[in-house]
Length: 81
Image 1 (cartoon, helix red, strand yellow):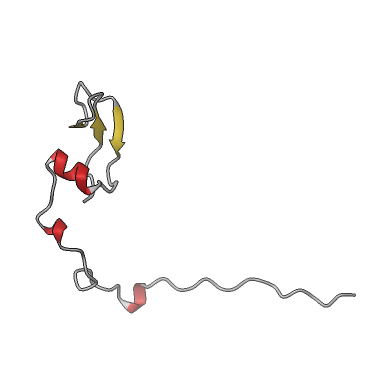
Image 2: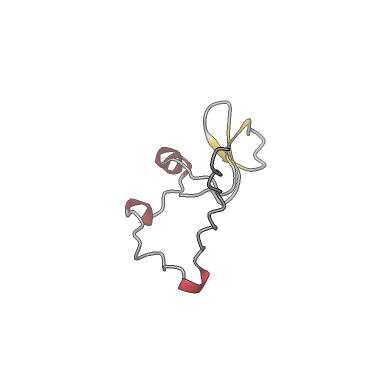
């Protein structure tokens, strides 16, 4: 599960939203992956989190948009003189 906004940890160890007056330390930035324990404690447990994502869930990129391998620019050393 990813954090949609910044999540802060209080001095007691609780997780709170951004802007909460008890926020002490940044626990997760926006887009960071939350641990399963913190997601449950924070009440963000997804229904789909129990099921791991498979390659069937993500469509494969079209062949025209796949990244090409960079050219091999390594030079072979010249013969010793």
